[in-house]
Length: 95
Image (cartoon, rainbow, N blue to C red):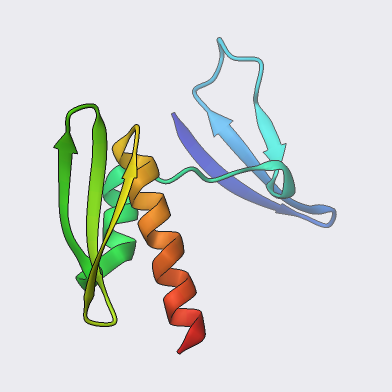
């Protein structure tokens, strides 16, 4: 499936191509929510990212923030990455 943005006077519409069997053909940009993949979250962490580990049934992401190692645990890797990224954004905003 491909997604194309279409500019109209009324705003941007995201068109979903290849969705003949789906009810969703298009949606206004304001109604869309981007949920990043694990690799996109890891990429956004950049050099702060240290490791990803599975400990029993929990995922742990370790990042280096202001010289300290911080760990974020969640039930899935994406959520652990997201928590780490939100903390990184907070640290960056305080600088």
